[in-house]
Every structure is written in structure tokens, then in C-alpha cells.
Image 1 (cartoon, rainbow, N blue to C red):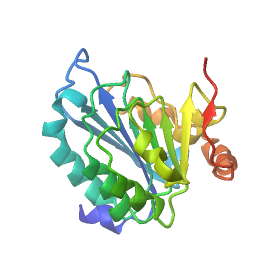
Image 2: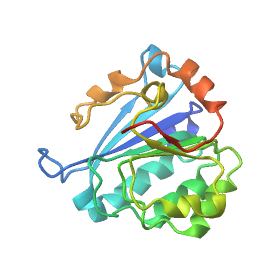
Image 3: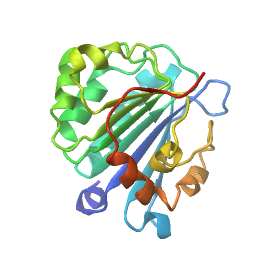
Length: 206
């Protein structure tokens, strides 16, 4: 933990939810990439959880996030297909309150029913948060209420440059760290272009 706090590199965190047909889905696995040209300017943490065991994984997950919270710039939470609303409001409130350098949140195929309006206001008031991308999610209407979250971008289908911005990963990646090779070396350029894009709701799929 102490070494993590002394590091200065920005941190990107991928929280990927495996399904119960995957071997070892009940175990939480963590892979952290430190070296190689893609990671010279950042650390990337891949955290593999299971939605049906989230009650067991939540405590260890929060402990890991706490280690990196002062350096986290990007958080991606990815599930497929959409499951029941297992993510608590407290997780999103924690990101808003305790990650001062957070710039980007990507949510894919999640049921966001538990997010409350107070948390949306906290996210909207975050000094550095540029984008909250909601991609193929369910029950995200609270994020749209009264247009209180100007950083919101709702995506249906796919948008050009999205994979380069969030990195690439398998749908159900192995827990051996193989996903760390999926980040595009061009991600910084593409991200810069998308960060300047206007925040709008887009519908690109059928």
C-alpha cells in the first residue's frame, strides 16, 4: 500500500464483471501493469469480479481503490449482458468524493438503478471530471434528470474512437493479465480528440 501511495503515475482502472459460466468467477482477480512502452506514463489495474458475488467482492474492491484513489484518472466498469442492479450508489459517490483527479468514467451494460440524485450532483460538481459515458446501460434516467450532469454522454451502438479511448479488452478476459496487452498505443491521441468533443446524447446503433 505504501508503495502505491508514493507512486506519481496516473492510474486507469478497469473493473470487469465475469459471468457465472466462467471458471473461477467467484474469485476476485487483480492484475496491475507497470512496465512496457504503453505503461511508462501510467499504471493500469484490471480487476475481475463477478456480479453474483459482488457482496463478497465489494470490500476487497474498495480496499484496492483506496490505494490508488489520489492518482485515478479513469474508471471503466464493464459488464455484459446487462444484469440486475448490483452496484451500490456508494461506489459512485466514493468516486465523486475521493478521486480528486478523476477525469473519465465509462459504464457499459450496467443497471444503474441504485444511483441517487445527490450522487449525480456530486459527480457534476467534480472539478476535473470531463466525461461520464453510459454505454448500453439500463435505468440511467437519474443521470439525465434536469440535465444536472453536463459531462454525460449516452451511447447506443458504437462510436468511432471509443475503443482507443478506453482501451481494448476481451469480453470475458482471462485472469492471467493478458488484457494488459489490449491498450492501444494511440489512445492518448484519440482521447485528446474526444475530450474536446461536445457532450451530447448520440444514437449510432439500430
